[in-house]
Length: 255
Image (cartoon, rainbow, N blue to C red; front, side, top):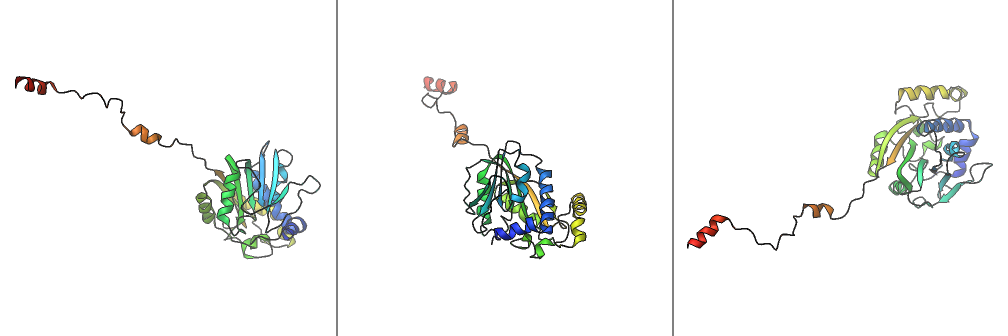
C-alpha cells in the first residue's frame, strides 16, 4: 500500500532525519547521473526530492505520483511539474523518457510487475532507470519511523532477478543510508562520514536502501520468415530436365 503524500512530504522536508536521508540518496544518484543535459527525466512514487539537480539543465522534468498516494505541487516556488496518475497507466508517450527514478514506487505497489512494464514502456532506447528500495538486511526496513519501513523490502538478488524478468539489464548498484534510522544528533551530524565510509566498503548488508541502475534492453528487429526463406533451396531450376549419365545413354542405344 502506498504511503500518504503528506507523510512523505513531512518526513523529507520537515524532519532532520528526512533531510539527511534525502541528501544521502540524492548524492549517490548524482554519482550515477551527474547531468541530464537536454534530456527528459521522470520520477515515480515520491522521487521528487531527488530530481531538483536536473531542473536547470534537463529538457523536461516530470514527477509522477500514484493516485493511492496523492499528489503535491512541486517544486516550491517554481512552475509545478508533478502529476497525479494511475499506478500502471502513466500519462507519458511511449519511449519519451531518458532517465527514470523510482522511490517509494515499487516496494509499496500492489502491482509491481505492471509498474515495471510501464517503466519499460516509457523509457526510450538506451534509457536508464534507478530503482531505490528498502534493503531487507538493513536497519531502515525494520522500523516504521521512516517511509522505508513500509512495503516489501528487497535483497539485492531479489531486486536484480525481478528487473531482469521485466526486460531490464542491471548495470551497477550500491547502497545508501548507513546511519541508523534515528534522530539522535550524533548520527545526524556524522551522517556524511558514514556515507563515505559505507560507499568505500560497498557492502549491501549495511545500507538502509538499495539502489540499482538498469538500462532498457532493446532487441534488433527481424523480418518474419527471412531465416526460412534463406534455408529453402532455390526453385528456379525445377522445370529443367535432370541430366542423364552418359553410361546410361549408351546402354539404352545398344539395346
